[in-house]
Image (cartoon, rainbow, N blue to C red; front, side):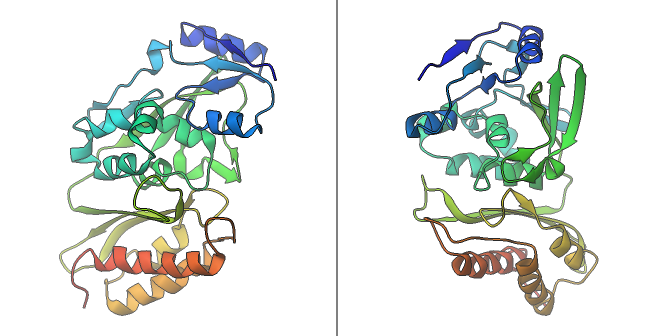
Length: 283
């Protein structure tokens, strides 16, 4: 099979190339693409190598919000002060494969790959991330929670490149939770995963909440219905029970080589219970 590599040296040149040939395959860390290549499931193509684009270099800018340039790796986040404000990003980065993968893999690549089992996307989505996209015709921003439309289907045109990921700086009072369940503690694809955040008032009323799941739907799933059930209500054992039942109507797990639907449903309910109970004693 024949594979070629095109290496532009500016974002403008990359966007010109995509505009003239939308079949180009963007390549950054290549940690996902090489899996398909090794498996023989990647059709011959021309890769658009993004590594020389200074405009996509890691930014890690904290100024009321966080900006991650599209070439920001998991390791970049783990070694930065970002983890002090966005701890779930550091927790997720720790779960993504071995150190070599963490040093090559990018957060933008995790989004663009569109895997339902992505480790980084749930944490980003729980922090209300937005995806910056650029094409020769202009730029736009899409909420990550609205980015996926189905399995490997996303709101990115073939002529667009992800240039950055942006998140608002978390306000005080939020509690974060990240738990991945896999065959092993590390270096395993998730069977189910929950990235959750919750904001309670002094009376333990749920002021706001985010619950984002991996490996239980065709794409990374934000459980907006279960969030709505919780929001504005006093956090009690009964409410937690209601949430563990409500989540069953939102997830759509399957049987596959890694797990079964029944197991994923049971363990996902346990994760919801653990997340809500971990916020403190319930009445």
